[in-house]
Structures are given as structure tokens and as C-alpha cells.
Image 1 (cartoon, rainbow, N blue to C red):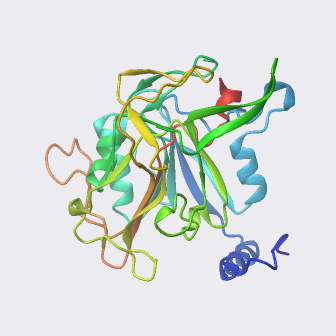
Image 2 (cartoon, helix red, strand yellow; image 1 turned 180 degrees about the vertical axis):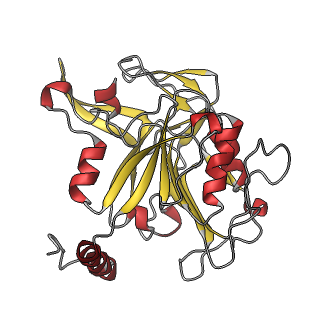
Image 3 (cartoon, rainbow, N blue to C red; image 1 turned 90 degrees about the horizontal axis):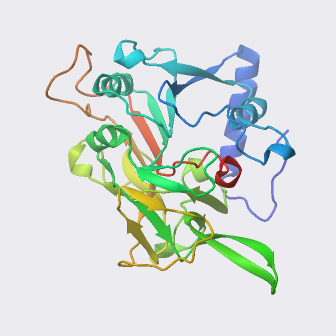
Length: 329
């Protein structure tokens, strides 16, 4: 059964049917798709009960994934300072916001894995906010992930993007009646058409999603010249290619201080140049190694993904995309 299909929206019907065929095949053949989740750096864990206030229960993102997608198996990946390789039986690896730096050798282990034609999904930015910190005081550090992405042609800027065009909003009761509180540090992307597209719903990761919140984002800039074998545009909207799949509105600006006050109920006073920033990107194809020269630190890595295979990288530059920042604070 496909539980819900709108007769008013036939877009992507083939995606649902193909997915259901794969699910039936996996059930019959007892196929498991193994996905690794990076650990060992104080990451925001998928097992954290950070989606709703404590009194409302303790659901976690991993519980939701495994319950709704029974043929996907998530397992922890500890690189042990770079001494351990990533298991070849994994289809891909997920990286969530780390709390401390990855070593250069660990970054090379991730690169080694991708050069085998594997996949990486990263949900992280430069914006670090500790759990149980209601002031939301942020420090800016990517903990080394920016060096990894840079080699694949995706620059993550050391900033936090504040969007006043599509801020996340909450209606609250005040002494004067109902009011709307805006949170520009939590961007509320939605579907726009044509050149005004903020959320690319033709991309599988955002398929049929009308709206998505991206808390605590950093800007992304593509540098396709670093991966000359990957096309800069998608033929018929399909990979291999570089692709931006989510953006802020043009009414956003960036803050680049080492520490940034993101207190949710402050009186926001925009300072700076209004710009539109890229927030999510995808690159797929025969990628070259992010570390083609220099000290390999004992990690044997292919110079490029083998012919006939593709590596895939998907980045949502939001440090708490997989959490509820209010509940976590």
C-alpha cells in the first residue's frame, strides 16, 4: 500500500511506485541498506530525544527512521582518530554537527570511503550551540568539515545566515494580545517558482516537501573548477552534476564574528548587505580525492572514483536540521 497519494498532484508518482517496488524486493530478498553515522566527536546524535519538550515524550530521529524505513540499518562509525577504516559494506555515511575537531587523518578516511563510489550526507554548519543553552549563544567552527567539503568543490563559509525574508515564526500570546515572534536564525524555506525558487522540490531529498525549517545555517559556495570531471549543470535535471537545492531569500545577511548572540527573543537589528545565500548543495559524479597531494598520513586513497561509479555528497548547512532547537535549548 502507498498510504497517501493526492489526485491533485501527479508529480513524482513514478518515484513513489519505484520506491514501493524496491521495498517489496528488499522484503522478499531480506536486503538491508546499511548506513553509517559518524560518532566520537560529541556530535548531535540521531538517538538524542531532542524533537519535543521532555514532558511530551522522548522520540528520537533514529527511532522515526528505523520505524518507517525498516530496510535501512543505521550503525555507528568510530574512526578512532583515523586508525580505523569505514566498513565497505556501508552504502553511505551520515555526519551530524560535531562538537570537537576531526583530525586530518579522520578526514582522509572519509575521503577514502567516498573514493570507492560511496555516499555522504552532511547535516552541519559553522554554528555551534550547546544543548540546554536557552541563550543560544553560538561559536563559529566547522571542526574540520569545511576542509573536506572544500576539496569536492563545496565551500562552507564561516558565518551564520540570518534571513528576514522567510524567518521561522511562532504566534505567542502577549499582554497586548496575539503577536508573531520571528526567528531569523531559523530559516523557513518554502516552494517558490522559477528564478525565485528557494527549495528545489525536484531534488529527491526535498521531493514533495512544501516547507522546511533550517536552523543555524552557514552559506555554501560552489567551486566546480575543483572537480572538472563533474558537469556544472544537470542534463535533464539529473546527475552527474553540481546542484544548489536550497537558498535563503534575497533579504538575508551574514554574521562572521567568532561568537554570535542568537538569543531567540532579542530585538533584531539587521546590519550588513542584503544577499541571497546557498544553504544546501549536492554534487554527484566521478569525484577526485579531496586530498590529492601532501601527507597521506598512512591512508591509501584512490585519486578518483573508479570508472563506472559515482560518489554522492549532499550537504544541508544547518547544524540542528535533525533536531528541534527550542526543545534542545
